Length: 106
Image 1 (cartoon, rainbow, N blue to C red):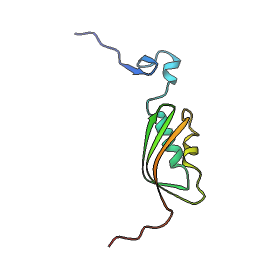
Image 2 (spheres, helix red, strand yellow):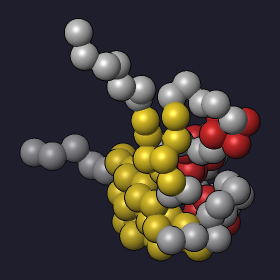
Image 3 (cartoon, one colour):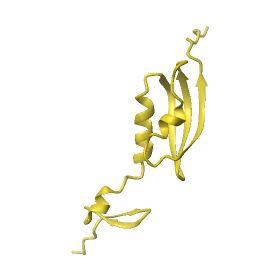
Image 4 (cartoon, rainbow, N blue to C red):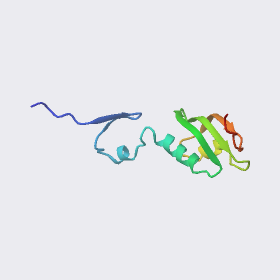
């Protein structure tokens, strides 16, 4: 029988043990936490309707890509994304569709 290796996860701060041995390891964010929180914040806005949405992590922020339909009185999408802790800047690559119905093809 061979030795059992402990599971280890590499983070920005270095190597961490699994399960966490220290409180700091348990409290550190998962790699995709910020993207998930930005997505939740954007999808919870009643004036935003996303046909598609991709959120990528950048240094000190996120990049938003996709297609968004907005109402006239909707808040600024960048301001909404910046509500999330850790998002200092937003690179907005969203295509904005008007708030009108698209006629059927044919």
